[in-house]
Image 1 (tube, rainbow, N blue to C red):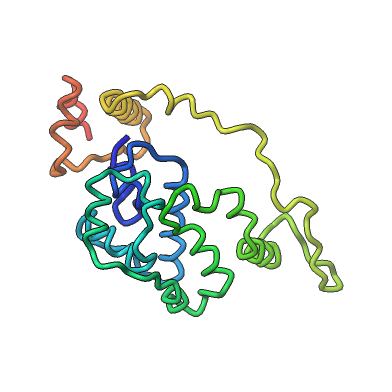
Image 2: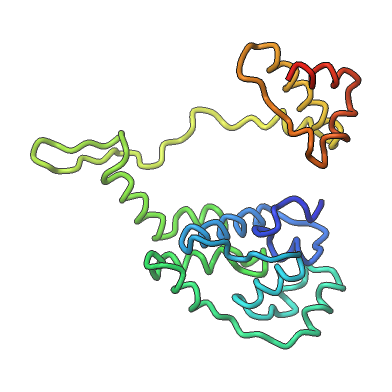
Length: 227
């Protein structure tokens, strides 16, 4: 469990406040941030550091209650209590763009909830009226599973949400239990790609992580030379 699990701009409050455990609710928060970014064409919470990130969040959501901060570490709670109380300003979301309709803002407000236990679930978010409206727009003019009759009437498919043929298999990811394993698998993948004749993958030798990455395998200099 690490604070670096999510890019800072899309990091949920419980991660910023040092929660010892987190759930898939952090992904709902991230999607909410991206949704707001799509509406406003700017990053919703763009800060220089995690503390400032938390301040920007409270500017919108207001100061959380002690109950909402029950997953936070003691230091983070103390930091919040030392600051002047702030009231929520959700009305600012309507100014993101002309596309910030009532349904859009309502969904956004349910995704950007401070307490992860009160945040909307993925299932409920997918059933939200805003997405139903978007789904209908897609099937009205963009999809290939529906068609327009000669009389100009749109004939819709009977199954707007087809099920996948098989469940996603995450066995490969579950086998990776350490950073070292991830590096070794990446190295193996790159080495295999170099032998296929495809356009080779390139790694920036000026990047900060290049030296530590290259040192995991003795044969790296040979691969680097071939690249």
